[in-house]
Image (cartoon, rainbow, N blue to C red):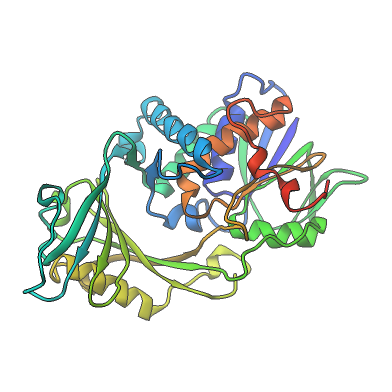
Length: 370
């Protein structure tokens, strides 16, 4: 069986890993991952990498999240994730701070506030612990999944732009004008999956009404190596400065916050951050650390598009014979990549997923297509 995966992000690379490491994957089987720009060029390389096992209770993705969290733990143990891609367990807090020195103090848990936060804390709560929260460096994790797949000798990466899919007379994909035959095709291109489905196979549009372009920064100062492994979902009372702060083991801090509504460009290489959004984000982080972080601390300023469907539920499964899709994970793409990939490998190789129920994510929920 020849399997072509369109998209070199975390879902596509994880799928390549689980396919090539499956006992059902034959000696003659092969995987080709097609990527137009770079591996983990979009959200897979620019996300925070925060993992939570139980933050989606009562939602369709709950079972998938719990499976994926366990798989992350197993992969980290097997692949030395702590060294290879900065896997570690973390605590998580919500934290409301003020820009005013005389702000009213209603701290609920003083002991959970990291020492680097020296702004007046109005309110804080513990919202997660090392029991169910963890983190990875998303780009490093994605690259590791790809490297492990390629190392089997059964997978390879092909650079090129996918321009269409074919079903007859020969099933395959069109890449830079050339046809590559395939027994199974998987579309795992993040937010670019949805227009591709509509254009190539006349699938109804499932893109959200508005695209969300997420801005983020990686900051580093001399003080960052000592920052505690505590993920912060923060807010600034006076400005509604909503910011997620993820300290990393390498001595940097990842932070994301501002969103912009802009049309999705043709590919990930064309996504550029807005200077005003980056400046606000850095300033907001600086409030927490009382200006210990400023624009001189910027190691990376970036943006990516949230890969979400119009109903905010991933689309995972068979579209038609030989054509599959795995996309639309929203802000939980890094978390849910392993579970999605394992389940999709089962569908492709054995005909059905046994590790998790994919019914809530069926492509057929939007239409009788296929």
